[in-house]
Structure formats: structure tokens, C-alpha cells
Length: 559
Image 1 (cartoon, helix red, strand yellow):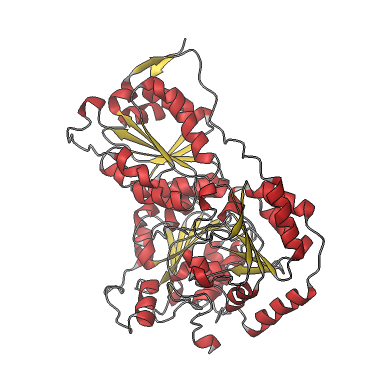
Image 2 (cartoon, one colour; image 1 turned 180 degrees about the horizontal axis):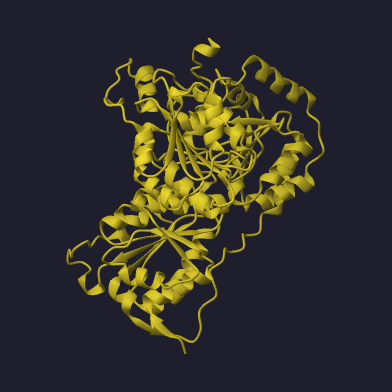
């Protein structure tokens, strides 16, 4: 009969979950776990420089593979430092399992050194959480944590383990089976048949694809459905890649920074087939004026999403892939000449605004040139801000799980550690991180992690010495009163990168920026490329916050 400590049992259970990489930082209350982890021959530990970075590394692994990933932290500040990244995972439905140390059970509630009620604090931002009270509980808790994280709508789970429980001996007959995702509930066939009839009857339908399409592995099915019934398709920020960027039926991203023709097409549609979306305000604008003449079919694995914001929908609780496969089998082959012609007219009259793409020193040109040089197999991460929106608009995303970004919480500091996580999970692929100076500074310490593991990450830094998207809103909506949105000192990012052991280049000093960009993107190992950007260059179009998507501010290029 096996006997081991709680910490040793935890590591054995993680090995059975086929976890091969864990990001984290040790501390006083999780040292027994780290002692056991150090004796594992199957799990590689990546020492992050900040717990938030560790959790975003786990996100990078989980987002790029679709499988739960693990991060670790000690109690108190270590645990609280995880919270932003956990909340980020909750909003974007990312399956991560966060394991924290806690003070011994007998000290809980005494304000002991580095004691914090992370169980209580994490309730609003996790899918589920546990405070483990005996080593034996781990036999149930760990497989359950993985089952919950990956089932239905994925999300983060936190497991808080007091130090004395980590050291407690436990004897058991056999290890439990690994936790696996639950089978999705059977769909309502009558509702799916009704949806198929609505699609076949409609004259001007649009397929609206969100992150749920990626989570369910339904991107290929969605594309085939669109092709069979000639469905122009839009994607949320989280849904980018659900249909290839270059597909003739793709209208790209909808919403606040969408091309004008995309939002206008939505305004004219008579049927919206919403798959794996949550009608986020950045996508819909003023909800009352979103697709005003359209019937809506809403498909989602999470029943709480149906009717939450749009109440007059045909709601179908179902795995998105299952639903789309049924629709694919039951909708008519249909050519929609009149609707396709109308979409083409909108595209011609209101083309996407991507100025100066010929120059690698322009914000859009930088994205396009970088995409060309790293090739279609690269994984892309972004931080949050103007560079994020430009990448979403201009990067030719070809598949699901290629474009990793913080969509719901919009967390600056996401890009670099998420890129590290993606590179750890895919050592054979290039990873490119588009970032801004404001975002990079929020987790810049992880450059040390990238250098230490010699990861093939290229950090493309659009440096405008400002919080660009904040400044843009101050200019447009606060009578140009720019306050606390620019940096007074110019940082030497290339020297900083070198200080971390990272190769770097500043294209501002380049005689041939295209050639230099191609060379450094093609090099092995981590590198940082700085490109100076004029802070006055805003990202357009832009829908004012809270306004309808038809009230886009287009910028000078379309005036």
C-alpha cells in the first residue's frame, strides 16, 4: 500500500495528469511541494520572476494547447500576485490550475506571517477553488480540479494547500484516475432543426464566431458551414483564427476597432448566428442598436450566457462543435448572390484602414512585415493597447489558438509571459509578442526567464512613450486633456534587453529596417526589436465607448 507525504502525492497526481511543465515561485509555505517537485523526473519547473508572470505562462501553455496548465505560488503576496492573471483566465475561459501554499491549518485565522485568505479572495475569479484540509483529500481534489477546469466552459481552479498538509503522511490503495473533461450535454435537436430552418430561410445571415469556437475545436466546422450556406462571418477578438483571415467569407473582427464594412454589414443582417460568444460590449457597442433587424440564434456551452444580454434569442445550450456539425448536416447548399454582392459593395466603399503597410517602421507595416518574416506557423501574443488592436486588425491569423491575447480583462503585462508559456509548450515553433512600452514594463522582469531558457521568442516593441489607447481616449472624448498618459523619460529598451541577456535591435537607427527586422526575427533564441511610434498616431476606426457600432470615428485616412 503506497505511503507518501501530501506534497509527494500532489506531484504524483500532476504527473498522472501529464503535466510536464509548471511555472511558479517557491516560498516559505510551499517548500515541501517544491522539495517533492525537485525530485520529479517528469515535470520541468520554470522559475518565474513574479507570480503574475507564472500564471500568464500557464495561460500561454493552456491557450496554445487547449489543455489545463499549472502554476504555483506561496501564501500571502505570492498567492495574491496570482489573482489578476486568474481573473484574466476566468474572463477568457482558460483552463489553468493554480496551486498555492498556505500557513499550517492551526495558524489559519491568526494573521500569521504571509497568511492570506486566498480561498475567499479567489472565489469571484475562479471557476472553483479548494482549501485542502488533509493529505487524503488530494486524491479527490486534484483530479477534480482538472476535470472542472477543462469541462464545459473552461476556467481557472485554485487549490490552496496548508504547509502541514503538504508534510502529512497519507496511505492509500491506488492512485485515482486522472481528471478529464466531462462529456457535453446532448443538444436540443428540435432547437437545432429550428435553427437550421432559420438559416435556410434567411436572406442576409451573418455567422458570429467567438472564443467558444476555439475552445470546442470547431473552427473547421464553422468554416465548412459558412461555405455551404454562404455565410459571411465575423469574429470577436477571442475568436480570431476561427476562420482564416484570408477566407473570402471572413469580415474579420467586429466591434470597437473593426473595419467599417464589418460593422455596417452586421447592421443590415437579418439573422445572426452567434456561436461561442458572450455579446461583450467591445464587440456589440450599444447593445440595443446591435443588429437591430436580426433574429438571433445563440449557441453556447454555458447556459448562463443565453439570455444574459440578448434576451430574444433562440438559445441552444450545447458544445459549439456539436451544434455546428448538426447545422452543417441540415442547412441547404445555398448561394446568396445578392447578399454577397452587398457585402462586396460595403468592402469596396469602406475598406479596412491599414495605412502605410509598406513601411516596417509604421505601426501597421510593422505587423504585416513581421507576419511575413515569421511565417504562418508562428504563434502570436499581444499585450493590451493600440498595438493589440493593430495586430488584431492586420495580422493574417490563419488558425485557432494562433493569436493569444487578453480579451475580457484586457490585462497589460500579458504578452511576454504568455509568449514564454506558448514557447514552452511549442519549442519547435516561433513565438512573436507584439507589445507596447506601457505593457512591457508591467512584466518586463520575465525577460530574465526567456533568456534563462533560451526560448525562441521575438518581442516586437512599439515604443511611443505613452499609454497610447488611454491618450487616444483623452484626445477624442476628454477635449484633448492628456494627463498621466505619457512617460517623461525615454527608456533604452535595447540596453535593458541586453542587460537581461536578450539580443536586441533598434530599428530607429537602421539603414535598412526591413532587412534588419527579417534577420532578427529569423534568428534563434529570444530577441527584442524596438520600433519608435508617434504617440499621435491613433488606431482607427474607433467606436466611442458606450456608443452604437455605426458611430465609428474613422480617422484621417477615411475622411
